[in-house]
Length: 276
Image (cartoon, rainbow, N blue to C red):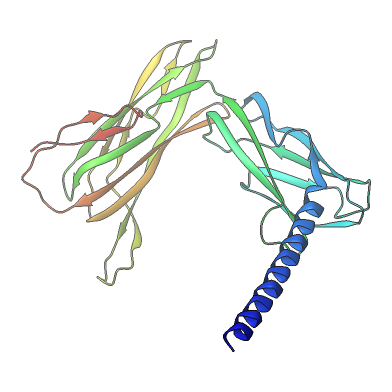
């Protein structure tokens, strides 16, 4: 009886092994079908140096080397600043599909910017191919730091910070429309749900400056939080058609007897603090 039981178990194990092998084989064939429909060339494209208001484009080509027709479900861009246009969805063996990508840098962009476009096959939840592209955005203004973090902010207590703006162009530039907008996110009902309340106290100076080539100017920010919670906002400035932005954010608490020091991190973020 023991030998009979052992034989039955061996038969069951052999059957399971056969089913698994066929499943793996089937999965392998499915993967091969996807692999034979592929991008021609690189999936990581660099546009080079472009202007802030410049639109650039590149066409990516996919080749169907499969023995059967394939169908694309969709293409999706990671940013509203990117348009991705698909030439056709159904591609016969030996045929091609093209994705024309057009990219316009978002307002306030500077330095290297990277985006993606994902291609999905029909009825597939995961992307078949992710196209990555990047560009270096050239601007006439170099703003440092790019982020101002409010460290040790307290209700009713003014906290200040600054940023430096430098003219990197070869011409005199008028920086105007310098303005700050801040919002408090507060749990007014005590139910864990924050509401957005415009912060009335932020001040930024100056509101305009003229910079010669290579010259720098200083922008000063002063914020007096009105509520405990989070604050978030930005300083915006314009130079012709170019717009730059400095993000301002932090967590506000109620009252404190401790003093705080102002420090600047290696990442270029200024930590703001005040002292009673």
